[in-house]
Image 1: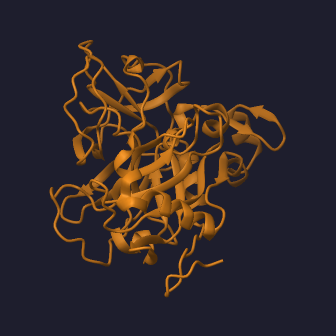
Image 2: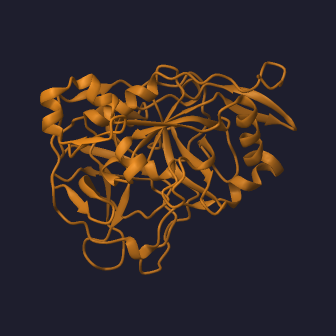
Image 3: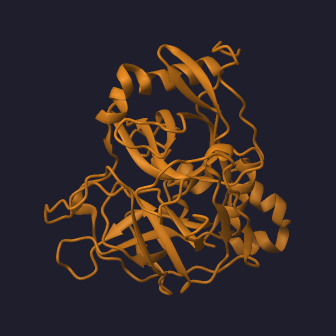
Length: 362
């Protein structure tokens, strides 16, 4: 861990001092930032309708959310991470409905795209996954795919998750964000060592003509990946996402239409970036481009069950060999502070947006 901020009292204390003087529970509570998204079922229904109107036109018009290719730089070894407790895991849950055919047997049903409007009002998207929560309503992605760091606002507007998204289609429904959780350091200081977010979502909505239908809970429809923290590096992970952007040299091998994956061991070396305040990231060799942002790093992934444990999310992209092509990606190290944010999010209920007859619930 690097540091902990205490927003309530305005004090900033080193981690070691906190550990000596405060309980773990009190310490963790001060790491968590939470912001509302759609605050009413009426707002949520309006947001879902925005994306679905004209047969999903806004979904198809959205482009990947990423920074300029000039920001793709070589990763620098600096700083270091220290697990702040024993390794921990939360088991995944499988879905309870048929998912039909799949283009690639390795692709988990839980992944999809999050759509939102950026600071200038343009429709954009990132990658995300359904993750296990007590109410089966939780999404994991990168913090910069939830919090508006460009506009210095709290959260992106009109934020939704569409699992299994494919060319304007939402096979399991559209899930509107209700409440976003991240580490205080990212919410306030844009510290990319905490570039992760967990978002609770309302029940999904499907549309039959102009009439909305309740699609049920996210986790019941697609399942939820597990969660892992304080794990050693050097373990094999499989990452997933929708790469789209060009490499720095201008070549564009990916379309963002279908998900891709990488497989390998996480780097034992931490990587850093002064610009993004990074000191504690871990890296993976993977030649994908932005659009992959927010995609899960799954530990102990079962190809048969398509389930594993989220132990990271794609945060940054790097060119290690200097040929102007991305060859590495990085993720924040998931530690006990990450677990505190996750635990706060997983215990929050969401509820339905529409009733059994297509009526809006108030």
